[in-house]
Every structure is written in C-alpha cells, then in structure tokens.
Image (cartoon, rainbow, N blue to C red):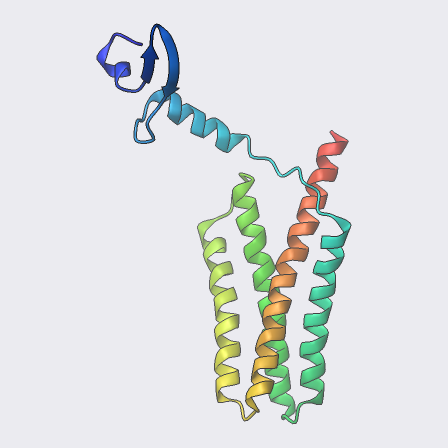
Length: 180
C-alpha cells in the first residue's frame, strides 16, 4: 500500500495473514491513472466488424420495400398531383437528411472533423422532414389507415437508409484497413 496520502486513499486492499485477497479501486476515486486509462480506451475504438451479407441484404430490402410501398401508395392515392409531389419530396428530403446525420455522427466518432453548423443542420433537416410529414398527414383528407401506412413506410425508409449508409461505411472502412 502506498505510504503518501495522495495515492493511499485510491487503493484499498483486504489483507489477511499477509496475503492480498482483494485489490480494487472505488468508482468515485479519480487519479491520473484512471484518466489516462479512459483516454486510451477512447482512442483505441475501432470499427473492425464487417457487416454480414444477411444484414446488408436485409437493409437494402427494407429500404426498397419502404420506398416502393410509399411511392406505390402515392401512385394509387386519390390526391391532387401537387399533394403527391409534396409527399414524394418529403420522402427524398428525409432520406437525404437521415443519411447526412448518420455520416456526421460517424465522422465524429472516427475523429473526422465535422463543423457544428453541418451537424446541427443535419439534425434540423431530419426532424423537419418528419415534422412536415406529420403536419401533412394531420391535415390530409385520408383514412386513418392510409395515414398510418405513409407514416410507417416513411419510418421504415429512414431507418433502412441509415442502416445502408452504415453498412456501406463499415464495409469501406474494413476494405481500407485490409489494403494497408
């Protein structure tokens, strides 16, 4: 056990008959060692798990199912053309925004600089696309089941777009690591 007061309180040992039974640190104890360990753990974070072909195909399938369902619903809807254009534009806006959020979040995790303004705009546009869809469906003269259908296919499309972007990024990262 350390004799000086600064480190003596950090280490606690249970000694019975000159044998160390336990040697532990309390979670609220903070020393330079624990700060250094946390920094090292943060730096060593790597993304070395390649997505499986099953997950990649499930992500692409979900994206196509969501988009095609949404667009088929619009095609068959009894709406004016400008309403159909509004909902189609919201789908494209939402997909781009969701991919942009995923990219900026991933860039930050990998230590690639992302400006605060771009990060904020990405989140703002994603939330705005969802809000615009909600407002449009709230005010639309549609059956409740149709409104639910558009909401669910939109949510499926956004989730799938994020998953496809993540898979693409993971796959490219692994390929670049293997080339080195």
